Amino acid sequence: SASSSSARARAAAAAASSSSFLFLSASSSSFRFLSASSSSFLFLSASSSSFRFLSASSSSFRFLSASSSSARARAAAAAASSSSFLFLSASSSSFRFLSASSSSFLFLSASS
Image 1: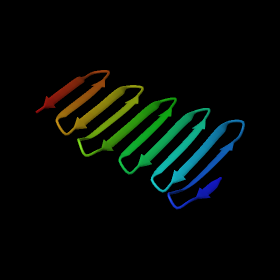
Image 2: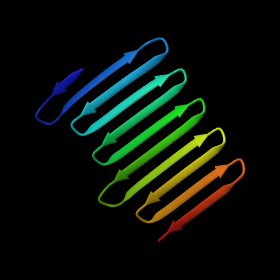
Image 3: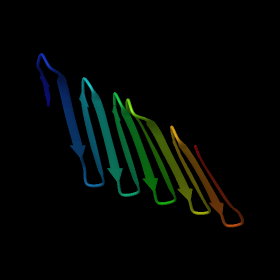
Image 4: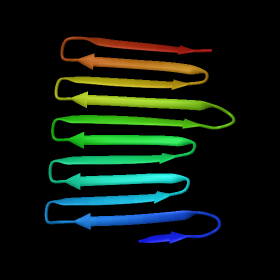
Protein backbone atom coordinates (compact mmCIF):
# COMPACT_ATOMS: atom_id res chain seq x y z
CA SER A 1 0.00 0.00 0.00
CA ALA A 2 1.35 3.45 -0.90
CA SER A 3 -0.01 6.99 -0.89
CA SER A 4 1.33 10.49 -1.34
CA SER A 5 0.15 14.04 -0.78
CA SER A 6 1.55 17.53 -0.50
CA ALA A 7 1.96 16.96 3.24
CA ARG A 8 3.66 13.55 3.31
CA ALA A 9 4.12 10.22 1.57
CA ARG A 10 3.72 6.83 3.17
CA ALA A 11 3.97 3.16 2.29
CA ALA A 12 3.14 -0.06 4.11
CA ALA A 13 3.68 -3.74 3.38
CA ALA A 14 2.96 -6.98 5.22
CA ALA A 15 3.66 -10.65 4.61
CA ALA A 16 2.71 -13.73 6.59
CA SER A 17 3.19 -17.48 6.43
CA SER A 18 2.46 -20.38 8.77
CA SER A 19 5.62 -19.70 10.80
CA SER A 20 6.55 -16.05 10.28
CA PHE A 21 5.21 -12.50 9.96
CA LEU A 22 6.80 -9.42 8.38
CA PHE A 23 5.60 -5.82 8.46
CA LEU A 24 7.11 -2.61 7.11
CA SER A 25 5.76 0.93 7.28
CA ALA A 26 7.51 4.05 6.05
CA SER A 27 6.61 7.69 5.63
CA SER A 28 8.49 10.93 5.10
CA SER A 29 9.01 11.27 8.87
CA SER A 30 9.01 7.74 10.31
CA PHE A 31 9.97 4.12 9.71
CA ARG A 32 8.70 0.92 11.33
CA PHE A 33 9.77 -2.67 10.81
CA LEU A 34 8.51 -5.83 12.52
CA SER A 35 9.60 -9.40 11.99
CA ALA A 36 8.31 -12.33 14.01
CA SER A 37 8.68 -16.07 13.78
CA SER A 38 8.31 -19.07 16.08
CA SER A 39 11.79 -18.51 17.55
CA SER A 40 12.60 -14.79 17.23
CA PHE A 41 11.16 -11.29 17.28
CA LEU A 42 12.59 -8.07 15.83
CA PHE A 43 11.15 -4.56 16.01
CA LEU A 44 12.61 -1.30 14.74
CA SER A 45 11.02 2.15 14.91
CA ALA A 46 12.67 5.40 13.86
CA SER A 47 11.52 8.98 13.43
CA SER A 48 13.08 12.41 13.37
CA SER A 49 13.21 12.55 17.18
CA SER A 50 13.32 8.95 18.41
CA PHE A 51 14.72 5.49 17.77
CA ARG A 52 13.68 2.12 19.21
CA PHE A 53 15.10 -1.34 18.64
CA LEU A 54 13.99 -4.62 20.20
CA SER A 55 15.31 -8.09 19.46
CA ALA A 56 14.30 -11.25 21.26
CA SER A 57 14.88 -14.94 20.77
CA SER A 58 14.75 -18.08 22.88
CA SER A 59 18.20 -17.38 24.35
CA SER A 60 18.73 -13.60 24.25
CA PHE A 61 17.09 -10.20 24.53
CA ARG A 62 18.25 -6.77 23.30
CA PHE A 63 16.60 -3.37 23.66
CA LEU A 64 17.69 0.12 22.63
CA SER A 65 15.72 3.37 22.91
CA ALA A 66 16.82 6.91 22.18
CA SER A 67 14.93 10.17 21.91
CA SER A 68 15.62 13.87 21.74
CA SER A 69 13.64 17.06 22.12
CA SER A 70 14.18 20.72 22.79
CA ALA A 71 14.01 19.96 26.53
CA ARG A 72 16.32 16.95 26.88
CA ALA A 73 17.78 13.87 25.26
CA ARG A 74 17.69 10.38 26.71
CA ALA A 75 18.82 6.88 25.82
CA ALA A 76 18.35 3.42 27.27
CA ALA A 77 19.74 0.03 26.36
CA ALA A 78 19.35 -3.48 27.76
CA ALA A 79 20.72 -6.88 26.84
CA ALA A 80 20.12 -10.25 28.43
CA SER A 81 21.13 -13.82 27.80
CA SER A 82 20.89 -17.06 29.75
CA SER A 83 23.87 -16.10 31.96
CA SER A 84 24.08 -12.28 32.03
CA PHE A 85 22.15 -9.02 32.04
CA LEU A 86 23.20 -5.50 31.05
CA PHE A 87 21.29 -2.23 31.37
CA LEU A 88 22.27 1.36 30.55
CA SER A 89 20.22 4.53 30.89
CA ALA A 90 21.42 8.05 30.19
CA SER A 91 19.83 11.46 29.93
CA SER A 92 20.98 15.07 30.01
CA SER A 93 21.02 15.00 33.83
CA SER A 94 21.55 11.37 34.92
CA PHE A 95 23.36 8.12 34.16
CA ARG A 96 22.66 4.56 35.31
CA PHE A 97 24.49 1.33 34.58
CA LEU A 98 23.74 -2.19 35.76
CA SER A 99 25.57 -5.40 34.98
CA ALA A 100 24.79 -8.80 36.45
CA SER A 101 25.89 -12.35 35.79
CA SER A 102 26.00 -15.64 37.66
CA SER A 103 29.18 -14.58 39.49
CA SER A 104 29.14 -10.76 39.65
CA PHE A 105 26.96 -7.68 40.08
CA LEU A 106 27.78 -4.02 39.31
CA PHE A 107 25.60 -0.93 39.65
CA LEU A 108 26.53 2.68 38.97
CA SER A 109 24.29 5.76 39.23
CA ALA A 110 25.19 9.40 38.75
CA SER A 111 23.17 12.60 38.40
CA SER A 112 23.71 16.35 38.43
